[in-house]
Image 1 (cartoon, rainbow, N blue to C red):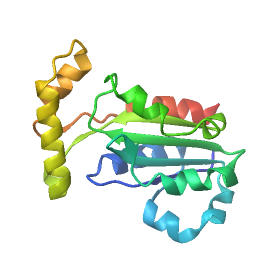
Image 2: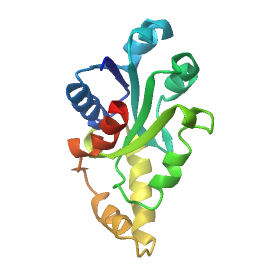
Image 3: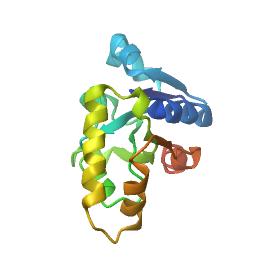
Image 4: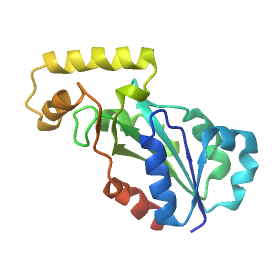
Length: 176
């Protein structure tokens, strides 16, 4: 498969997943800045185009570049993945991921989530403050969801729960 994995990464988790995915598919990982400088036609040579971005307020950062170019790339394997600090199985992950692609885009592309982690040291001051506020909200909420309970424990400090196994659904989709 001739694949390219374009990514935006703030703290390194999405970059790690993009590089793992490129290695597993025999493809190439490329930062979004480089991809934007090439123009959409550059990507016509690829069989599969994957975009990876990090989660921020329920959206995949810088995914507009990918979704805007998707109609040009119909007929190719198209996927988008989001990496975030939330654990797989969290109550809000399915809801967030269901909104990544619109109804038309979902006919020819698929969205995935990969749990990553949190690196307070690498966050901007604004992001760090927002995450600390989010952590306080999660801790105050009472929930029976085990993933949400674990998230409340983890989010207070930096952590890394990324694992190449979370790429398996993406690889399976690309190989169909």
